[in-house]
Image 1 (spheres, helix red, strand yellow):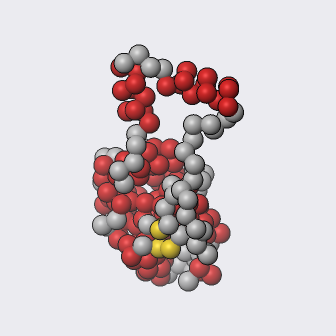
Image 2: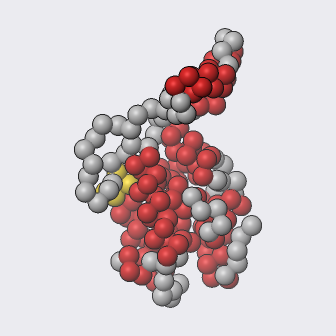
Length: 187
């Protein structure tokens, strides 16, 4: 199936795997595919998403929140309320111990050959990606088709993140289809 993917779509899936590894996940779900699409702001699918107020940093925070991770802004605000300036603490520690001294170490897991494996919903999104492309008579699978696959899967973390960010999945689907069919580069 990947031989039909345009280079940008391949990059998005590769970046999705990198996002999964960055988060310490041994799976590749719809949330990682969404982040893979957001990773290249100049890409047409990322531009459509940007038109709905989404970017990579916000996407990462939303995914971590959806999966039960910490929210750095909320943590910093809580510490500031008791008189602790988190930025000053980080600067002092990094000055003494070096950049990234407070970053969490990567999880101690045995690396899996070939990287993270698709979840059931991730696999389903990929199948729906192929269907979206063939349904439009496209020879190549573009990032917009990947976004349509995520939206049409409908039950994964990606769609939950979109809804929590105030995005109407049906409106996003229409905008994505318009961008693909019309060759429009959404702003």
